[in-house]
Amino acid sequence: MKRQELKTFIKENKNFRFLWVSQILSQITLNMITFVMATRIYEQTGSTVAVSFLWVFLFLPGFFLGPFSGYFIDLWSLRKTLFVTNFLQALTMLLFLFVGQKIHLIYPIVFLYSLLNQFYGPAEAASLPWLVKKEGLRTANSLFALTYQSSLVLGLGVSGILMTLFGKNNPVWISIVCLFLAALAVYFLPKKEPEKIFHTNSFSRFLKETKFGYSFIKNSKIILFPILLMVFFQIFLTVMAITIPDLSKEVLNMQMQNAGPILIVPAGLGALMGVYLMNRFGHKYRKRSLMKFGLGLALFVLSFIAIALPYLGIYRYWMIVPLMLIFGISLIFITVPNQTLVQENTPAILRGRVYAAWSFFANVLVLPSILFSSTIIEIVGVRPFFVFASLFLLSIVLFFEKMEGFILSKEENLFRYIGTNHETK
Image 1 (cartoon, helix red, strand yellow):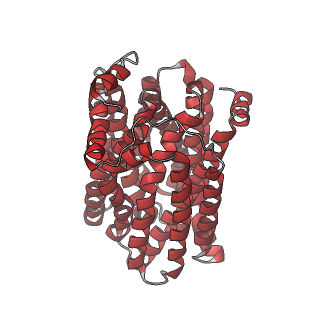
Image 2 (cartoon, one colour; image 1 turned 120 degrees about the vertical axis):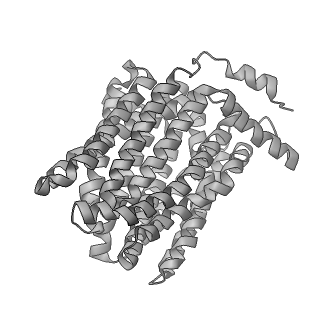
Image 3 (tube, one colour; image 1 turned 90 degrees about the horizontal axis):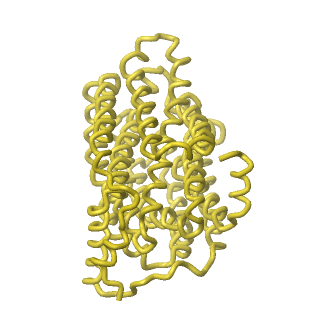
């Protein structure tokens, strides 16, 4: 898609702009506060395990709510869900101002914030097909991916600088303002939403509807495969985030506060390039081909960091920047086609449950992966761990190749499955 077409899409989709603003501000807040709290924990403890528990408490709510939040999202108003969660998250951010030197208080506050996010995230994803026409989903997902990577630049990349120049609470105040503005943005979304075809307060019905959501995913391989791929990739990205303190200290020999401009900003700029390339050339290729290309780039970057980078001496500072640039491009080519594939093939009445299930599957596997990875890093160091991580990503690539033949064609009649198995009365 050309630049003018992209501008036209944004101009003509007013409701998408409201949702997009909310997503931008929410992502900046999440990345900013995560980096700030991880830095504070690492500075006081020097422990990768202590930092990993920040991610444990970030993912833990999804472990409990993931199987069920989608049902409520499909039942509730998407607009109200987005507004209330943003507003309550802004109030939660105020609690960080009272942490001081009591680092242990960070964990329950992060848990509460993430608890609210279990409703915001799936509701946001389920809102796109409501606010954007089918032919605009690829563009909308590209812009959302752009937001995600840009928020890394703004949230992670400048948080350390803000802490150094203006104090540790400055990013917290910025996050509070961002979330209140995010709530204001979604308040202006249309009050009329897609019709809900089931309304019930019965607990048995609740269990039945939740079970059906998982049954739909299981029996629709064109949905199941992208979810499995992104679950594995989310594990990979989360584990890589845990390595940032040790990678900065042991491999790059710099403080974690300075990691943003060297590691995060190039990845964000790479994502910007990836969005441009996706919108310019992505329509010419099949989604699976784009994802395979992205996985190949990510594997190259990680393998180079694991095998060659530690032995380049002073030149490692010159090499890490283009490597992270390439890594940012790879993220776009993996996530955007994947998101579009799920959205195009999921009925409106099931989108909330599908995205909630996606979150749940990821949390179930991410939690043990975080604890396992941080323990291994503490024992063997970050360099050997990168070799192990390269092998893990290679397994994802091989899994992709193996499962590709089992994906059902897009012409599969998913709605026939729904009509046969789902009562709508």
